[in-house]
Amino acid sequence: MAIKRAIKAGDKSVISFKKVIKVGEITQLVNSTTITPNATIANMPLTYNGEGTFYLSGTASAAGGGRTGWGIFIGMIKGHKYLTESFYDKMLLIFTDKTNSGNYQGVDKATPIFEFIKESGQYIMGWNVNPEATYDVTITPQLFDLTEMFGAGHEPTTVAEFRAKFPEAYYPYQRAILTAYNKVVRPCARKGEVIQVADLNNFTSPYTRSGITFTNNGDGSITLNGTATADSYVILQPISKSIAGAVYLLGSEQNTTEYGVANGLMLPANKWTYDPGVGATGVHTNYTLVVKNGVTVNNVTIFPQIYNLTAMYGAGNEPKTLAEFRKDYPESYYPYSPIQTKNLWTCNKTSYFFSYNKTTQIYTINSIGSNSCYTLPSPMPAGQTFTISVKCLSGWIPDGCTVNFGGYHKEGNVRSWQTTVSLPREQDLTGKVFTATEKTTNTLTDFWIFIYAKIPTNLRVMIQFEKGSVATDYVPHDYI
Image (cartoon, rainbow, N blue to C red; front, side):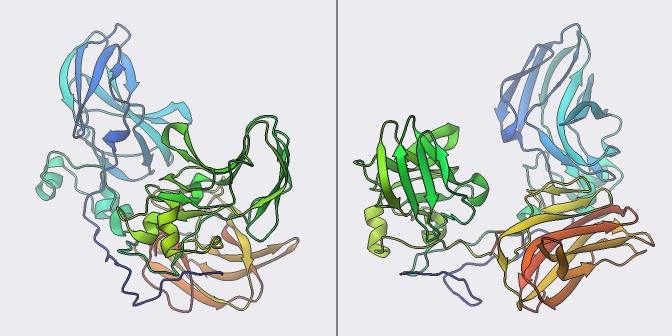
């Protein structure tokens, strides 16, 4: 029995949230909880006090230096203006390129508001100290993106001007764009709203490991053959397919201890929980299928399943056992039925001519180029209507430059746009949204980015690709 789940407009079982963050609200980029606790700077202890503060005491080594702050990874944007008060007497704040330690920008106490002049990318924020200098200070690392908060050309020019609007001494990590939308919250489960996220569409078989051959049968099942020379496992569901913080239930009763076959959830700290057929719950990461060492299997077929209980029942209301779950969902097998997302556009490829921030889902164009940023697991058939919206955070396109974003058909040498937006030239694009609606004439296989002839200036965009002929308000990918 196949049960599909879809959320429709007016579905009262869904609590929706309006946009809550506006331009001018806080974008503070330092997440103190990710900083390595109890580290050292030039042989001096740096102790985490909680609530975003660190205590540095002692006398620096003769060499001085330090740049300690590992764990403070910041996505810096060239041309943006930032404010920080995260340095003290005899200290220099350093932003070091994550991939090239020789590429860095320093900021001293005299320039709390500064423009980032290095290329956009991931940087490590840390401190340099003077040789043999003595310190007894409490550090509160903060970094405010003034351009994102106030808009290009409207940034405050003094700390006093900024503090007149934002007077608190400490603001925790938050981003205006990231916190503008909230994921769907389901207050209760209803029969028929299954969210079963074991997607075998991309599992290539036959696959042999440690004596066991795994064969994808194409109907949601996998057949196992062979004798395991070690614990033989295959990853069915990577981290990128899951949602952080959700509780998952392994629910395949076909797993049995007599076969020595089990589903597995990799939990935080690389600890594994296995389900031999009675169910097991945990917070994701990888989802696997395993045959234990020494076990022989001959044409054993199982239907791997993993259910997102948090999305189905709501946080705190998840069932604890497979038996409890089966009272609501009695079928032994439910096919792949993921959370439906409005914005289909996403990116899982790297390229030389654009960068993509997975957290903010912002694209920054760096050069000329043409490439797919995402290939759909299964092509979407022709004859469907899609609307693409490109929201420009900043940018200028010179005369003679072509910039296209859109759906694409790529099959061998046959290529064609299937819903595309071309951005206009020679105008300030900041804050503008450009849309297009088209009915596809061929299968949709990829999402594509095309930059031709000249390089745009500081072009940063957010993209939405949705079904239908109406452009709706932007939401990030994987949000309802």
